Amino acid sequence: MGWLDRLRHKDNSGAEDVAAAMARATDAVERGDHRAALALWGPLAHAGIARAQNNIGACFAEGLGVERDLALALRWLTLAANSGDPVGQRNLAALHFRGDGVAQSDDEAMRLYRLAAEQDDAPAQDMLSWMLLESGLPEARAEALRWAKAAAEAGIATSMTRLGMMFHDALGVERDPAAAAEWWRRGMAAGDPDSEAMLGAATLLGQGVAQDSERALSLLLSAEAKGSRLAAPFIKAARAASPIEAAP
Image (cartoon, rainbow, N blue to C red):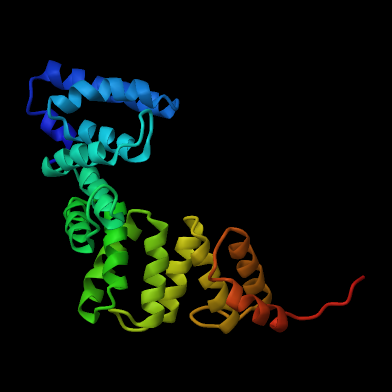
């Protein structure tokens, strides 16, 4: 049950007051005024509103509107996570993953990411999928695939890229170059330059998509310009394969 759902169990006037305060805080954040947002979240957090607790914890974790204080971030995010807020669970997982203000623990991070993922938090699904795949355990691949699909369907571009890799490399699924290329197309459309790089490589090699060295080079150069490190190993080959044209 989300924080807005919990509010519906209170009297209507109270729910409206909390929702209005949260909306005003959101407006303040959009203006870049985190101090004003914190002033609105503070009373709500002390009253037990988990999303407000998360938001305060996130501000202390990142130093937004307040001095960065990992101890206070941990305190507020733990309250939010224990109340079942999926964003609080995801943000607390990030502290455990990085070892910020708490002992580093992949196990605890994964436990918390899984709790948030099970509540349909797409960024948590994406991170959990990545951690499962990075574990290198063959038995973790099926779950990694499941969470990557969930996150990708929710619009997370990095999960689209990961799905392409999994179909290309047969990780937890039968190898399917066409499916890999399709996921990379979707990831590129969603803005991930790594998907663009991998689609360029697939286009260069003709794997799951028609071979076209000119288009491959265009994709690879575009991906590299956007920051993808996956493009560079294929650019020289794409240049060599592209036709030489005479100048007018």
